[in-house]
Amino acid sequence: MSAPDPTPPLLDPALELLRQELAGLVVRHCPSGTVPSAIADLHLSRYEQSTRSMPTLAQPALCILAQGRKEICLGDETYVYDPLHYMVVSVAMPISGALLEASPQNPSLGIRLDIDPAEINSLIAEAGPMGVPSQPSSRGVFIERLDTQMLDALLRLIRLLDTPKDIAVLAPLIRREILYRLLRGQQGARLYEIAMANTQTHRVCQAIQWLNDHFQRPLRIDDLAREVNLSASTLHHRFKAVTSMSPLQYQKQLRLQEARRLMLNDGLEASVAGYRVGYESPSQFSREYSRLYGAPPLRDMARLRSAL
Image (cartoon, rainbow, N blue to C red; front, side):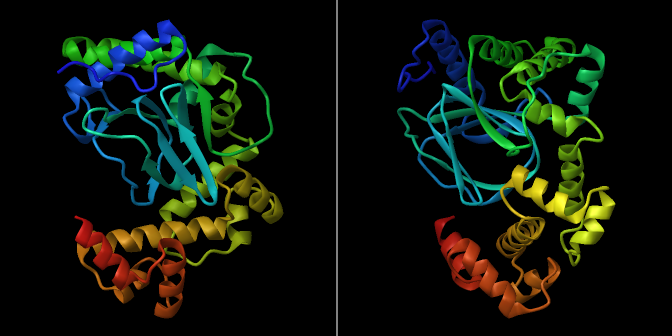
């Protein structure tokens, strides 16, 4: 099947040619939905209708669209990217999303390359000073303009799906090039800070990891601050700068997302799911669930199951 016609075309002819080839590769290797590829940490996606996804805990990743537009919601903030821009999630974030343009004639075609902060740390250690732009700590998700060098590197990576014998040797090299170009980009400081020990952003990442591992436990900010070697006020300020929410709000989203998953996938009753994720009061669980998802658990489950 040939690549769909671009809508809209990119302004740079060289970039547009690369985008068209990328779209064709995704169409060929991804029949529908989101699927893992033969290349580690590389996922392809193809959707033929606009849809809104369930809130999920997004892990660090580079996301690029070969076709379509996508909206990401982080708390009260909205980010939109398209084939002219890529999105990077630098820390684990509870987000939701929506495909804004997708049809059978022009499906949404995307690529996600998961990022390991330890790999960035190793790259920095080996490459030495790279002139990473310096900037204050800011959101752990950002949108950046796509250029031909980045798209060419990603395209060379995905071409390896047509020559599987080359993947083991060449994929790690191209992957490191992609991470290098991310670090040298205008937003490179955001990735640099999460990888380098002893920065405040790195300690916020440690707090995020702790919350992901222990979200069922009662949260005491002073204890969490001591865990990551920050003052309580600094942790609160930096945590909100990176995630747009306080540690308590972040924990609440983790709990409610997991409770929703338990009810939908495992068939647990609301009271059991709420207790499983750390709520002692069923009424508090129902109130906070309704506030996040727009309906109490029973009605929300009925709505979700009717849509399956």
